[in-house]
Image 1 (cartoon, rainbow, N blue to C red):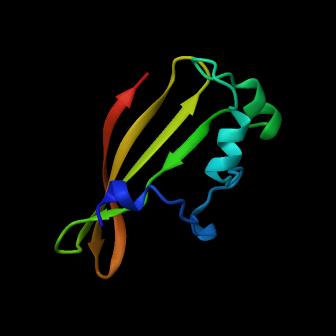
Image 2: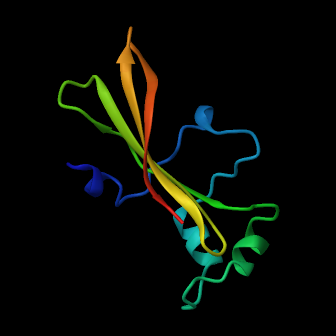
Length: 109
């Protein structure tokens, strides 16, 4: 199964990798906060549903190299207006541990 297929189904994010101040929310909860058909989406419902939030973060499951020694994760942060960025985070396995290697910026608005 490829990365796009794996990311079609929601997957729980391990709690040990969350950051202080972050709120984990299901895709359906976030989609519900943005309900309506406004283009661009209206953020007032998001702010009501997630008080204090300033942006929405998106993270993919990792995609691994055939050797199993490298992995890439897509991460993006989106905020109201023309605001946000998306990145590929590259990790490598070093002495049995995953180590961050580099960031590849995919887009900025």
